[in-house]
Length: 428
Image (cartoon, rainbow, N blue to C red; front, side):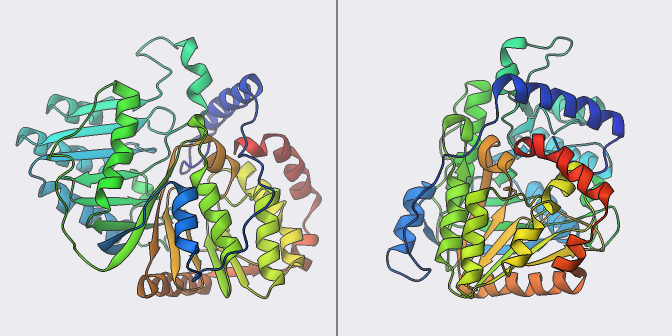
């Protein structure tokens, strides 16, 4: 019900009312309660096997990763690789709107379809509202296009699908020929164009991947495609033999709460508990639950530097108020909080001890941890992790640190809206 850039007020009211109604009908989904957490540290021999077990994702070596910041770096790379596709393209996206970017991407998909490439496009029924004219560009060219957990047929609401509507596909996936993959937090909207420093545009972080791990990114798409259509995608066109492309070890961690799995929550929790030196979190929707808050405070108490970067501006005011409601306890506990100033912040990254990092679609809130289908790439590579630390430091230069005194002195109006956000916090 958020994660959309600058929607009209009417759209927000209608979708917000629908989501609130659904929440009342089906209850508030939460992650499984976690009591004891093992005392492991990043670098211990048991750390990697523990993460693999609870993330249900193997750590795969010999990959190459390019970190792509903002639309200026991401979209030229995506369009270049799409134009080079020879056999298959798979694409899953939560947010797909109209505009110049959407039209250019649709035309690129259509061009490859006409050239004989098999193109499969999966859009989320809640997040995507591309105009029919853009969708028709792809359909007329022969692209396969469908909607994840669609409630609305062309003219009719299908009531038996309402119970699944609150569980959305928030993953971002693009795979070219089964060999090149992209993921991150980006949406297909002109709001994602630019350098991340422009007002009313998103600051985001994404990755391009080559190597053996791409098969797991492809598998995340084919799982969702199978659920949506009943069709299995397989064979060498989708899952070719992949050779070593670099030296990076990584895993693709996918969570599917509707099936009872909360892998990304466990990934974050175990990594926070394991930190020895630093935890650097960038996230646009930072509303940790009590267990995650305790883990962050425990880390700060053992002298780990815990720094959180959140938006100074946001697309959905209730989410912003819900996030700020939690600042006081964390600030008193030694956690540093900064708000990014120049643009809308949408990066979803975490770096631990300068050696471990994750980038993906997962927000630091109950909706991502307990409701959405999410996907994160986790890397175990000191140079890349340190590159992300440098990016984090640069973002802090464009941010404002929040002090406890400032937070405590906030006005009655802000406190009132924080109270208003509390009843729907678990659905944000």
